[in-house]
Image (cartoon, rainbow, N blue to C red):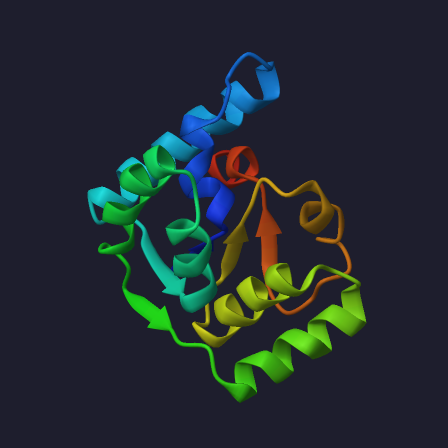
Amino acid sequence: MIIYLDTNIYCRPLDDRSQPRINLEAEACVSILRAIEKGKIKTATSDILKLEIYHADPIKKLYTIPFLSFSSEHIEENEKLKNTAQILQRKYHLKSRDTLHLASAIKAQAKIFITCDDEIIKKNQIIREIKILSPIEYLKEIL
């Protein structure tokens, strides 16, 4: 099974952990990233994911780039993917970058899209193309 991680999953361990929710999500993300390193989880990456990571602050960039090499598949952006993203954007009223991530995950045939983005998580009930979970929900589901 392939999963797709939103950019914020890779970066969350380096966020300010003074808020309990952020700290819990960061710990969950670390667990997920360790499982990826050990080959227990297969992931897909995408051009939009790489773009966002390469534009992250330098420390987050240094931390996250190595995890991209563990990916089982990379989805390149093309017109078909952009069209799918536009359809998702109109259908679910999400930001264009978010729909590029979702379209990439769908194209990779990922079973689960993991994100810390509340706007996307709130739409989990209506988005039928892929299952969306927070990192904490994902760990609860697989344990």
